[in-house]
Length: 366
Image 1: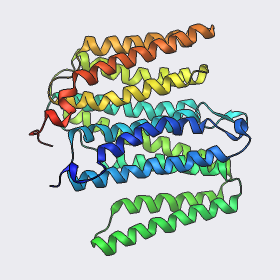
Image 2: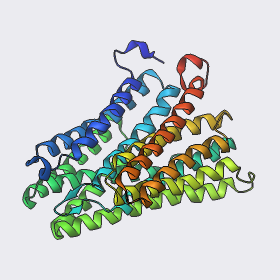
Image 3: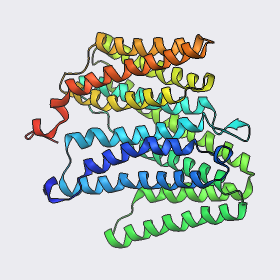
């Protein structure tokens, strides 16, 4: 196995660069044509999203070449989840042609799924079980990314003929990847079936449906596959956790907060003008989820009181923002929720530093 030092750029550095670029990408999404008077910033946002998404393949390649690290195993899924949050939440807040681009409840369902699966992973780790990432989960991610890409292209390119060319161009490109894998590696990459199939159905649907009908169909398909992949994990959890002991208070608090926090956050997006607060909170909380899974494996996860205090602070702040009609109180509630989240999560990362920094785990099995 090669060493990380053999490369000028490590997988972890690429992942960190991806994380730091995401807030800029979210800000670019808010620079709508109605705000700036042109689609220039949205085009930049689209290319930024493509670059950010492509770095996932780059850091994966570097990790395979030089060997995985504990920190990398923590950062990579964290970056994927934060990217989904910072891609979808703005679209539920931005008004375009008199309405939000996406309904807030759709984004709430997507985030709810991520929160619950993360909470289930901690329960598995506590019991020395492994909640394996299903292939359905990977398909879910691809569908979400395809939906975002298609939506941005529809908003940017108003001409149906050009959009059809883009759709079928992507079908041809995915076919090229399939053939390359078949010829070079003498094996069939099954992901190509889903990639090709999804793009082909997308292109065919766009050819026979109106733009609004196409967006509605794709939106409901994305929601359905997202929930189905979550149910897949839930069924697995019900089967494997049965008979492994009652849920502890800490596990119950994690599951309750997994249901409560994403919906409160999206309700704040819907009811107030402070969407930046839910974006910050959800990004911070999704970041700590992977760390919690790692610490649970070593029985060093936060206990019920620690987790509950942080969740209580977040919940209290968000509720104040929701029930108050005074903008100053709404802002104060949002700031309080962010501070509660940031302080609690910051402490978790500081407390767990010996469990994810490579210097402290030279001999740890990866």
